[in-house]
Image (cartoon, rainbow, N blue to C red; front, side):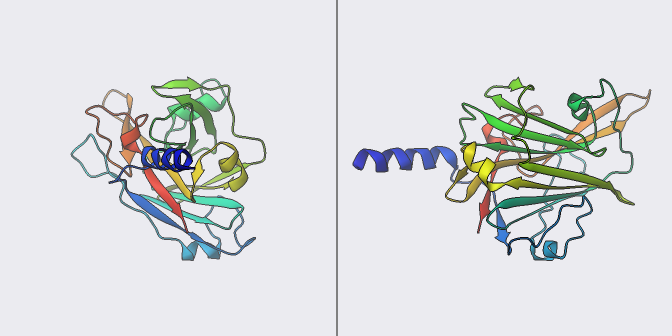
Length: 231
């Protein structure tokens, strides 16, 4: 029994850093939210809008990004609202990898701060494409992996100021992947902003909720993650 308690405590310490940033996910009744890609469900009025997104590696102010989340016991709902005056979504190979070359928002989820054996990534672009994959620290990506079928619903829409991404992830899939601990989810909330520079080159600018302890842009490290607390 003592060994089990010690092991559980060690896992919890490894899961969450003492100074980790947190976001509270409020609970709503079941069957109150339908994913449309427009974020027009009345239930979203209950969510807290997280707007603390910055350029961790740049001095200028980042364009506005808002994240909100709710849950109902069966699904985790997430909503990104993005301000973007020059959306870039190229078609290269016409597969999910194309999302990785586009303006997009990202949700990374991990079991603990070791990022082992896997952490799980969803990169969703403004055109409605999703690059889903799993990875192992450090940056060992498995693009052949996909989120369990029917367990993740993602829809997008254009707005007059940018785009919106609305999604639902089943709680059962989060549990099956070992991602939920005491209703806490280690998560990275990110955005990739493509800008056209002089000469026509489209460069990436990286936006994050948490400021990673890295000198160069990198979201695939433990310090890039915060915690979503499901209440």
